[in-house]
Amino acid sequence: MWDPGVRLPHKKVKELWRNGEWNHVLVPETVIVRIQQYLQQLTMAGKLGKAQWSGCDLCEQLDTTSWKEKPRKQIKQIKWNSTDTGWLKLNVDGVWSNVGAGAGGALRDEGGNLVYGFKTKVVARSRIDAILQAVCIGLNMVLGRGQQVWIEMGE
Image 1 (cartoon, rainbow, N blue to C red):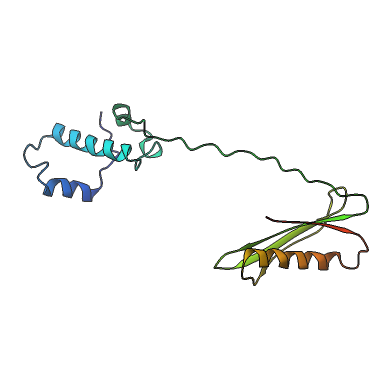
Image 2 (tube, rainbow, N blue to C red):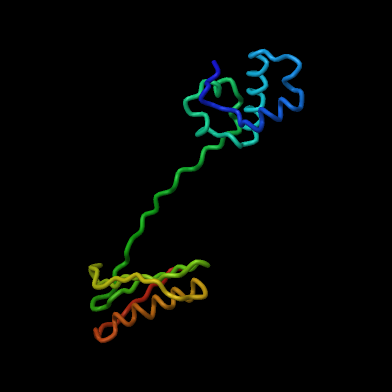
């Protein structure tokens, strides 16, 4: 049975009407068949997917082999590698876009305990510029601590 919740775009209905495709025999069954054909074309072209068909009985009558399932996102385990005794580890990264840039970092001791963290907006001309500014900010945090520093930067 046709689900009235799925609607054919108004412009497409007008186009079909103007082209005379519905003028010759205007009975509900003919209209429904034409709409089903149009929806099948959209489905096969990949313009209508599973999300648009939820709750509609009509999809059982259509060829849905063109539907592609999106692969699930892989969960990636991230491990923090500790430093040698007496060292600090500075992890920094920077971001850049035409709208603005930013830098951030975390300073941790050999046990992974947070010593200091930061995030800030920066004026940068590229992502590498933003990353290097993050390194400078991080090294200023370490200055005067008298400890060696292991630096890791974003790619």
